Length: 293
Image (tube, rainbow, N blue to C red; front, side, top):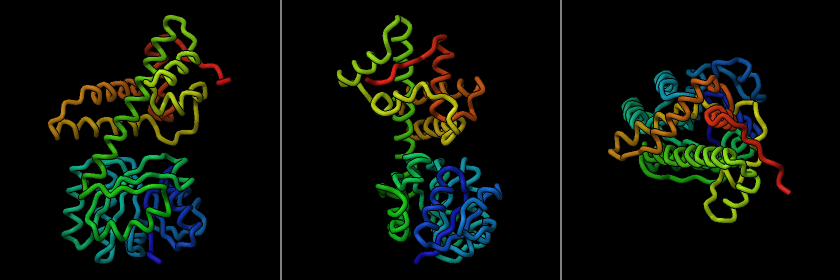
């Protein structure tokens, strides 16, 4: 069995590590928070160097591109030749290409596999992985990824998987916000929001938020699984990729502005589902929806 390590034990990385332990893997883990390390029962705790030295594939799940680059540097100093750094973080395509080039010079491989599915998907092995990397190291990673998710797409070289993740995030962010904006317009003229939702679903202009998330709009203050701060970071990366590609992206710019406003309102540490609070504050009216019959 391939020796696997996990660095970064947040909502995604912690669940991934727990699932690998449950599969009977002997894994090594590292995190800045000792409590997170202790929380993965059955795994060997250590620092980045210890995990790198013990693993053929090291999975990273980290909050920012800078954190990924810092860990990659420390990892490369201790990882055996031919080892793979398999990064699940949402980062910069250009930054990942630079990391891949640097690791190739030290005799290592870099594979990006950003995810969609969130913390729940990580726990339930329902993640979708968007992979970028060379064929040989990707092939070595696939048996691990296949155990941790429901679908894996190899989209091309490093950078391709990350670009796809940012495209997916743009669609998710835009659908969520335009749905909240539309509900705010409906509420402003006194329409019943449950009826408005059923009209949209029936009329065909629906989206994933209206179909699956809107029924939970009244639940606020969930434990954060994907914070609005992380969403704003991803939105900034989307704008950067659009600019680098020469693609006009006014909707991406608007979404980034909405998320920056949410952070300015003190909502950064809130779960993504609390974006509704920003919509209510901007429109000056509550968004309440009755339970479905």
